[in-house]
Structure formats: C-alpha cells, structure tokens
Image (cartoon, rainbow, N blue to C red):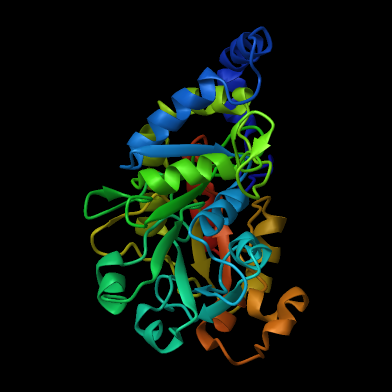
Length: 367
C-alpha cells in the first residue's frame, strides 16, 4: 500500500459531500441569523430526540457542555466530582473550571471504563456528582452504577463525547444521566468542521438554567440573571450537523463492519483486541488495541504506511497540571498500565475494505 493510511480522515467524506456543504454554506451565509438561529433550534430538537431526551442546548464544545452541566447542577468550590483519569483532559478541566475537585477512580482492564466497584469508597459528604465517561464508543454499566449510589444525593453526568450513537439495553448513550454532554469535534462519530457541543436532559428546570448559562446567564437581551459564559453553537455547524445526523446510523454500521473485520481476522498474539460488553451496541469511535511492545508495533506500522494514535498516553492524575491534587505513580495501577499499552487502529466510515484488509495482513505479519 503506497498511500499512507491515516487513523482518521475527513477528506473522503468532504469530497463525497462537497456540493452539499457548499449549498449549506451559501444558505447560512445568506440568512439573517448566523448565531442561535433556526438551524441550531432544529438540530437541538433532532439530536435531543435521537439521544432519548426532551431538551437540547447547543454549545461551543464538549468541554463547555460539561462545564455548563456542572454549573447548572450547582457544583462549585468545596465540592468533589468523581471521574476517571483515563480520559481526555477536558473531562477534568471542566471540573476544575468550576472550582470543584476531581476524584479519580481506576478503570477496568478489559473495557477501559470506570471500575464501578471502586466508586463507593471514593464517595464522601463532599461528593456532588459522578462524571462517567462512555469511552471509545461504549457505555458504562449504568444499572450497576445506580445500585452503588442508591439513596445518595449524587448526580450522574454522562460524558458522551466518544459514544454518540452507542446503546445499552436498547437505550441511547446520553439517556442515562441527569444531564449529558456531547462533542461534535471533527473526529467524532458525529463531527462538524470545527468545534461544537451539546447538553441534553429530560429535566426542564435544568434545561431552562443551562440555556441561560450558555449566554452570560441571560434570559433576555443585555440582562444577566446569574453568572454564565459565552458558549453558543453557530448556524453553520448546526446546519452541517443536521445534514450529517441523517446518515449517522449508517456511518456507525460501517464502523462496526470494520471493527468486526478486525475482530475476526487479526490473529497476532502480541495484540489484545477490544471488548464489546454484553448489552452494549459499541459505536467504535476508535478501535483501541493493546500491546506490550507498542513502540515497536507503531514503528513497524508506520514503515508500512499505517498511522495509528494513542488515546491516551498520559494519565491525567500524573500530569504536571494536576499534580496539586496529590496523586502519585501507582495510585491508579490499571490506568497507568493501560496508558503504556493502548493505541488506536485506523477507524472511520470511509475507510475502504481494501485498506482494512491491508492493515490486518500487515498486523498479522508483525513478529
């Protein structure tokens, strides 16, 4: 394979839909409202329905979605929020931006999701919420999680940045928490050509507060009811997302087709393949494998024109920026072990099966 195979590419999708994109650009550019107009409203309604929620609030990013959720729920100074260290930094930065303290729980070695059995010992009188990260494309076991926090006044927040289009027991990702956050960053299962995010909820009270928080705490022009931020999804991104949402289920089916081919045909014993948990419909935002010889594996694949990615090489609890939290090496053993071994194979809907077969053949030839 002479051409480089990227871990993710937008080129094929853009070329395929270029004429439609240009029409969308012209339509929005000629409209009278560029920010928070009919395209945003339409997308909020369609996407909230897609995720099994009554309300949607389009915002600037997935990070902002998390921060607005925390602000809506009154999380602030002195509060603790339980989450994982094996996630993107924004999950944690949103907590810190609200002056709350992140409390880390280790992950399962098999599926990389939060270890629910360890949550109870992390709960204190200061625990205000749990941000569960539906990582890499599948959901945390919410049935078991609810057993743990039963009779406790702790809000479940879903970080669905990587799980758009996934399901658990037939229910969509984003329908399990009191509020849920989504990202529409370009690489995501549902991505735009820039930043974008969404808060979804079935709680009308929280919806009404969150919709003000995204615009300086305003319910009417130039008057703030409480401190908020500037985080609005614009019309152009919403219009693109309205178009792409129509094909989301089909694009995820293609991801699952690629994942199934990987699962059935990769036979290299030096690679541990991902697990799709029972009762889960994995959306395969990324296809994450493990190897104790990761560095050697990646160099070999690169020489064969196959580019991969590591999500995530640095556990957040050991990062310099969060050293003040007091964690040290060895505190989250599974998280630290996984960070040394994981990497993602190429995965996106437009990836041709010819390339997929080449990737598999190349992996099986590694020794």
